[in-house]
Image (cartoon, rainbow, N blue to C red):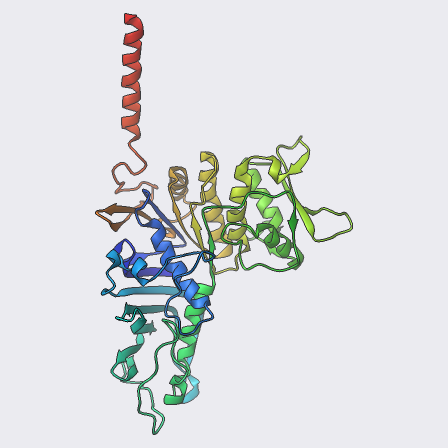
Length: 454
């Protein structure tokens, strides 16, 4: 789970320092306030990690990528390519990492449950991206690769009880990092005791390989869905693989629990339970078209207990729009980071509120982290209510208001107390409701006067 994020010179953000991330992290604000850019930074890092090009410092994406960002000039603040893009991220490991001492395998060099990574990237006059330096910090110790004349150097701090031992006769500098976060291969050849550095790099890669993303534009429901038996990694950017995920979970025999003493459910049953609790439909199932099997399936739903089963295409659009979000929350492996853009799109206000309960349950039962950006007042108010009802602690959430002034974005943490109240509610957060009511009343009075005068 990501616990803290700092970054500078990314899109409309000049600087964000020590942004706390919680199991449920929500970004609110007006259009073009910078909410999506924060998500895009994480997606850009994920794309870079998953890129097959080891020499590509950053993967800015393309039309098929979760984040299609263009070039360095497009992402750097104010398009000032003389500036440096940097970020600093801290995260908790799913399992404690233990590093054995290179000279004594029975002893621990250090161990811990949290790692930090920071990097600074610039573009030279030939429009080539350069990693000026990157640092891994782990268990009160940091390991840095820094550019110098002739290559890069590797240092450790503090170095009182540990130093890198150079292989005799290999005094030249190191080559450039792998992508923007990886130690070059020759590190192990140059130093006798640097093998453990790959553990830190692997932890970074696993963090972002565990990021799952669902975009704001979802696929229309279909009357039939083919499935070849594959197990998808996620729902796809538009939720187009949601039925494949449901079928893969059924084939695998995946069962979910809501806690000690509760009945275990299949993923399909959990989805059906939520759709019923959200009052969207009363029944849900994925069935093969042919009774004897085959690879073509249909999604059937029941509007209410007394009605017949119909295809998902024959009910309200909201069912197919919320389906990928619910499934992803329970399909993603434990420890995943789920990024959602506007999960409330096309949903009734009551269902938008219920989506908060889905997030809370998924965080409690699946140990996932959910990071979302939203315009939904109803989703936010349900989170506030659950805090007041002690369903979740205030520090289980990290809620922010984003706004833009003169092209630069700013981030304001929303302080939620034990009673679910936001102590620093921004002016006109969701519009001025009282002013709207007052103006409506005033217009009604004026109209009545006109009618009476006539």
